[in-house]
Amino acid sequence: MKYANMKLEDLFLLAKKGDGRAFEQIVLSTENAVYNLALSLLKNKEDAEDVTQETYLRLWRSLAELKIESSLKLYILKTARNLALDLIRKNARREDADTVIQGTDGEFEVDIEDTDSSSRPDIAYLQNIEAKAVRESIGELPTAARELIILRDVEGLSYSEISTMLGIAEGTLKSKLFRARARLRLIILSKNIL
Amino acid sequence: MEKTHSCKYFRLQVDEYIEGELTDAEMREFEAHIAECEDCRREVESARRLYAILRSSREPAPDGLHSRIMKAVKAEGRSKKKALIFRRSALAAACFFICLSLTIVIVMLPMWNPSNEGGAPLPADPDFAAGETQADAIETESIAEITDSLADFTEEEQPEALESVPQSSVASAGPAISPSDTIEETMIIAESDTPPAEEITSAAENPTPPTETAMPETIRPETTKFYFKGENKDSPTLSITPSVESTYAPGGEEITMALLVVSGLLAVASFVAFLISLSSVRNTPHKKDKEE
Image (tube, each protein chain N blue to C red):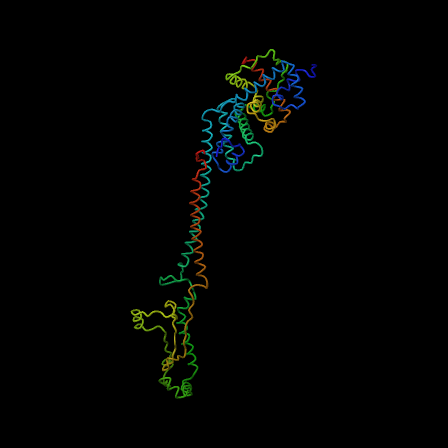
């Protein structure tokens, strides 16, 4: 049985029956996404590793009783997000936790005309160092904006999945995401990454 | 071409265009615009590249994180299995010892009979204990009744009663009873079927095979025969055979054996279940199987 080619939902059914290899494949398929999301929220690699580990421990413990109606990946990411927010509260960074939860962090107005391409460097020559530079730029975004960029543009979740996960309407989500992307472009421009 | 919308309007649609979320009409209008507007076209191209970089900019998980996660998960699984083993083993052990205790009680119960003397295990059957002295009681009572009835006759009447008997029958019955004989002298002579000591010894040395109708000696009743003095022994006046009652209540022995068998089987079954529970949790589902 080749677990690497199986869908997450099929692996989940096998893992519920006690198949340890299936559970391990679930971890392999999703641990990068979980780690990146945790890192985007916590901005600390050690904390992100702890949250990632705890996410899968909780999944393992609740495996027998768990029923996934939609996406297993979405469920895992939601668990990781909640754990990261709990850790933020625990670290007494309440302001950051509230802004992330409310999604008010990153509320900014960007004038589209400020991003006139005639004054913006051409980003066609970005290579491997560009990816690193972009990640650094993402790290400079506000927490809420950073989370949206990670979920949509890095992990590729759909608008409906993100709206379900964050508990916001799709229209609001698109509006926030638009502003987050615009802000990211400004940061990239300011760093002369191109 | 006259612009129906400004570049600002179309730049708001760049993300949706790249993600394919515009309607057919909106897409035709957008493509028509960027075909003519170089700035907007470059904006679209830059956005595409940025999104491509974002998708490849995923931070890789640190080395060792995966193994660390799986170690923690396996440790969690072992602790759950230990708890499961403990619960199953405790339950199986409890069942085993309960069944074993029942078995011991059922086996030992017949041996515990405070009224039994002499050491031989006997069931506590009051009827049997009474039966041992029953023959003596009957003999005593019989003697007492007969002597009482004899006492009802006067000394003068006794010879008359005897005289009423035809002389021939009296003579055939054996030596006549003299009127001078006292009641004690005419006392019943009790005999039992138990052979004399000499005969018993002889029988022990030369045991005869039991006949089909012979009863086991342990429960062979003793027939006690009472004779008047001088009476023909072949036709005793009174012959008493105490009834032999079983040492067990009707069907009691079978019930006890059935309970004993059931308890034993339950004890064995619970012990086997205990062994199975130990072996089943040793088969770890996390064993690494070779990939096909």
